[in-house]
Amino acid sequence: MIQIVKGSNEDFPTIQKIAHLTWPGTFKNILSEDQISYMLEMMYSLSSLTEQIEKKKHKFFLAKENGKYLGFASCEINYSNSPKTKIHKIYILPEAQGMGVGKALIAKITETAINYHNQLLILNVNRYNPSIKVYEKWGFAIVKEENIPIGNGYLMEDFVMEKEIKK
Image 1 (cartoon, rainbow, N blue to C red):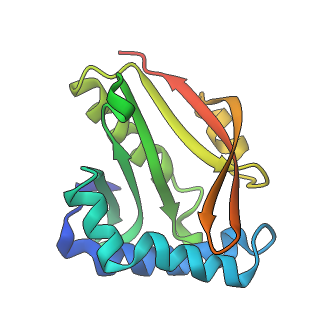
Image 2: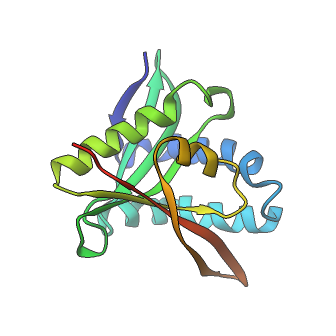
């Protein structure tokens, strides 16, 4: 049975390990190796993860089964001072994909959002990422495109997807 636990600073090594195991396979046909390395450092260094939890107030959740961590997600409640919860990250180990881990993480984020009276889940996804189909299956819809410069000459070319929260 998949358990979802709240993440903290002590979980940073696990979060980093999962990110480093999932990103190369997830993005190998979309981003260059250099951009993958740059983004992993930018988003998953200890200082970046600390800032996400302590300053930006992101909430991390980890999925595990039989003591083995299978994936993680992070979200921000009341994103941009609105009744929206933004899912910033959701990554599942390749061997755990298709086992319901992502669905369990989304359910936990939805439950958390409802507790804060948020009405909408939003996320960004690379326009060429096949997981778009999974998000659509879960009830998310593409609402717009966004290009986000992230430094070092790199650009995130994303769709913004939304899902209304049903209580």
